[in-house]
Length: 317
Image (cartoon, rainbow, N blue to C red; front, top):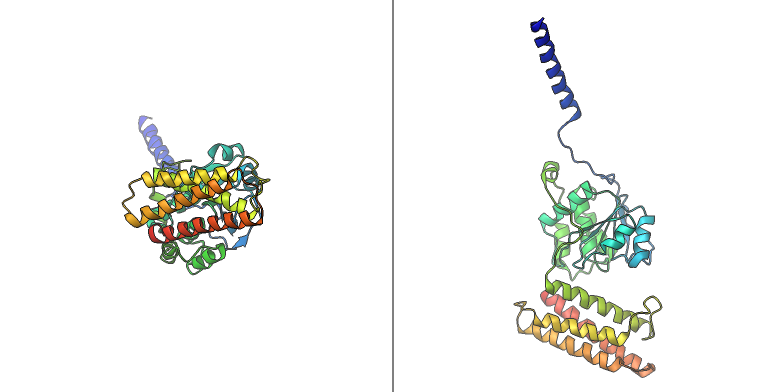
């Protein structure tokens, strides 16, 4: 009897082992967003989502969602996860109010490293989709991130990467972004499966990056005022043009205090930009705009923009 029970116990153990093997197969790469879908490259008409493109059935690329309306639009589109590759702190609470998860994976204008591209691929594998990848304006960093992740997962033919960058308006000044996409390739399934990534809603950014992000925000506001002939913005009644110019000057002053190690030319460009921004503030303060002041203010904004582009070309891109 005992012998019979022993045989039964052994057989039972073997059956459990077989069941375990059946229900727990080796981990396989699974894309939650219907990976290996056809690349579409369709522009999405949405004012709340600057330069928004549908890259494939499970992936969108664009700019920073504009306030509550932007996140509401993402929800309407069926998006479940938002990935920011921008340096600015993501609006996590606002996204969560609309049932969206935020993940912060910032990278620069100088290119996307292989390590970072693998993290983006892992995010598209593990996080609930569809996914919206964004930078600030949606023209440069997010298209590059979307293209590299799509190529890395085998969802986009390599030759389509540069095509998408051009469609999205990625400037050829950002040679690092174009080179990264040109050098992208599909990753091995096992390496992506074994990759461990902690997806955080926000990650710390250096003070210099924070000042750059803030400066860009204030300069964008000034460009909107310029486009609106320096009249009050209906979409932002809380903003004052003179105050935005003053805040921009202060951000340039903050950048001047950071020891960047970039030398005298960089310091001089910052100083000139700071002086021009403060001059614009003084010019706009308490002034009623007529035709001549409008043209002078526009000229000042153009000069500041030219200085920014020159600095970016020499020290960032």
